[in-house]
Each structure stands twice: as structure tokens, then as C-alpha cells.
Amino acid sequence: MSESAVVLMAYGSPERLEDVPAYYADIRGGRPIRPELLDDLVERYRELGIDRESPLNAITEETRAALERELGFPVHTGMRHWRPRIAEAVERALGGGATTVVGLVLAPHYSSLSIARYREQLEDALDGRAELRFVESWGEEPGFVALLSHRVTMLTRGHEDRHFVFTAHSLPARIRDEGDPYEEQLLRTAELVAGAAGLDDWSFSFQSESPTGEPWLGPDILDHLAALHERGVRDVLVCPVGFVADHLEIRWDLDVEAARRAAELGMTLERIEMPNADPELVRTLAGIVRRALAVPSGA
Ligand code: FEC
Image (cartoon, rainbow, N blue to C red; front, side, top):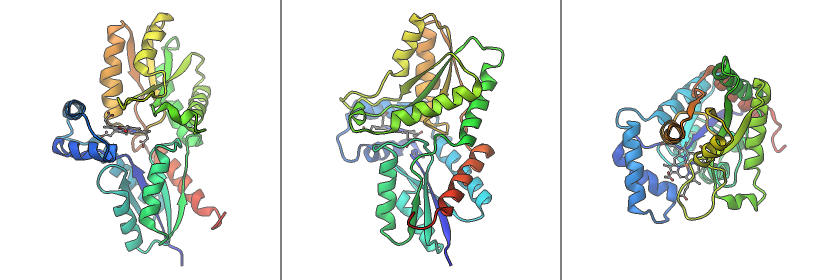
């Protein structure tokens, strides 16, 4: 009889400040790290308060447990850059007797530099020992769009004159020349959410670019805020669509850095509450998993 399990994958986050160098080394994959960038990253995690609480890991565990209850079969967490690693999740799934594994990433949009890397780790670890049903993207899922548009509506009510900015993590701009679907998928989610929430005045920008020395997709939100200011926009509402949880890129890059830039420009900036482990997101993820399992083997 076929037994199913889910390997639920997330970026991963250090648990303690002393984990940050090893975590950053994992993200860099062996490429050198400038000491001042490491110091800066440690400082951001200190400000985030990770020695008290690591938001991303706690939210991922809450989502995992809720998804397991909803599905009624095992869901194992695998982190791309921290523990438990994707390979550990695979061993747990196989140890529990799984013959079919659904690979699902807690990031809705496909890119060769993000989702494909999760897939590689998962496939390497599985090594053909179970059938893999991998979910490549889910940014157009009606439940996800409805959840975001509901959050957007909660912010716009009574403030219909405000400008909405949808955001997602930037990536090196070379993916454009490689025909990567990342940007197109992100814009599609933004269009669907804006349509469902009845927004007329909205735009899209990237965030969280890394100083890797090559051009990244833009406009970056910090520049975008200045451009919006030039256009006369004074009040900005932000809806991240490329992430589902509270973490460093939300709580630092948006809540601190972007909010600071907006204040310098004399603008206000608010953002939606992230979906985190919202039951609506969990039901949406469960639907995705059930459909992945319903596809006949080899289809
Ligand atoms: O809260 C946390 O502790 C973790 C927050 C976190 C999330 C996240 C998501 C994405 N990233 C993506 C791409 C890149 C690329 C590089 C890169 C670098 C970092 C660094 C930190 C970091 N990322 Fe991240 N990312 C998070 C955290 N990310 C920390 C290293 C320091 C820095 O640059 O600020 C560049 C790697 C390199 O140096 O070559 C590329 C993408 C996502 C969204 C999809 C996903 O969640 O997987 C894409 C959350």
C-alpha cells in the first residue's frame, strides 16, 4: 500500500546569534564572505531579537503541525539553509514508511535560483527511494489570493486613496535573460490580489537585494519609495507576495529599513499582516498536497 508524507520546505533561520556565521556560510555556499557583511547580518538578527525567539522557525513549525492535522498524514519540515535540513526531513519521511513524498516549498513562485535549489536538495536526499511529487509554484492558488486580498482590504478600508506596493525578494537580474518565470509569476499574483481587492492604484517592487556585486531585479523598494514620492504619493501600504511568513526580510527590510526611508521622505508606510500559519493558508496548502497526490503516477 502507498504511504504518503509531505516534506514542507522553508528557507530556515538561525536559532541563536552564534549560529549566524554558519548560517550565512550555508547561504553563500562556500563563496567568500566580507567580514563587514557578516557583522551587519549579526546586528540585524540581534535587533530582530532571535536569541529570544526565531520567528521564521517557530512559524514554520506551527504551519507544519497544522498541515499535518489537516491532512491526517506526516508532514516533516526541511530547511534549505538551517536545521532540520531537507535531508533530515527525507530520512524521517522514509523512516515512517513513506513511499510517496510531496515536496512543497513555503514560497509561492518558481525560480531557478530558489525553488529549483530546494528541489535539488530534496531529490539528492531522496535518491529515488520514494516517488516524488514536487510542487513547483502555487502563487495563483485561489485560497492564497483570497487570503492576501482580505488582508489588503483590511488595510485599505477607509484609506482608499493610499498607494499599494506589492513586493517580493529580488534575485540577480541575469535570470531575466535565462527565461526564468519568477517575475511573471510574481506580477500575476499581484494582479490577482489587486483585482480581488479592487485596487486601482498599485505598483510592484523588489526588496532584500544582497550586495553580491552583480545587478539585481528592480526597482528596489527603497528607490521605489523615492519615485513614488516624486509622483506625489504620501501614504504607502505594502503587501509582500513572495513570502508567507514573518522573518528578517519582513521585520527588518520592510518594518525597519523601508519604514525609515518612508519617514525620511515624509511618507507613511504600513504593511499587511503576513499569512504565517493562518488556517486559510493551511487549508490552501492541504489542497495543493491532495491535488499533487491525485495526479496519476508518471503523469
Ligand atoms: O528570517 C530569517 O532568518 C531568514 C530570512 C530569509 C528569507 C529569505 C528568502 C529568500 N532569499 C532569496 C534569495 C537570496 C539570494 C541571496 C540571499 C541572501 C540572504 C541572506 C540572508 C537571507 N537571504 Fe534570502 N532569505 C532570507 C535571509 N537570499 C540572511 C544573506 C545576507 C544578505 O544578503 O542579507 C544571495 C546569496 C548570495 O550571497 O549569493 C539570491 C529568495 C527568497 C524567497 C524564497 C524563499 O523563501 O526561499 C528568492 C525568508
